[in-house]
Length: 137
Image (cartoon, rainbow, N blue to C red; front, top):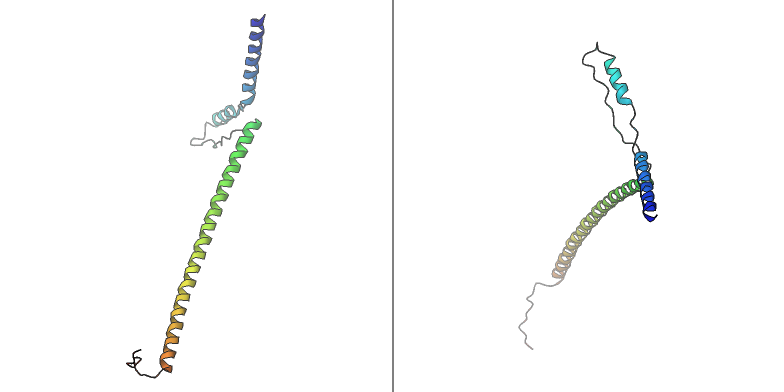
């Protein structure tokens, strides 16, 4: 009795699997037969090529496949967005670094100019006498 029951359950699973496999495959449209009939119906026109067909797979009806495709599209969009923001951040930081270097360069130039001006003013205010008077402590 146990063997018969397992045999029936196994055959039921096999039947369900085959019917679901057939249900998931797309039924071919008889477009190829119509196309060949059109080409054969025009024998007097040599060099006429049939219009090209764009073969597009039908959208899967399996929700797991749809979810996988949606996840793949979302991941691709996220990756592209992340790359774009990373490049934008890099460009912004390079621009800020260049601006900082320019400010430092200008500050050094201004500091040197101020130093030279103060030195010239100090030299102009002092008499041209030697600094060492020869006195020792």
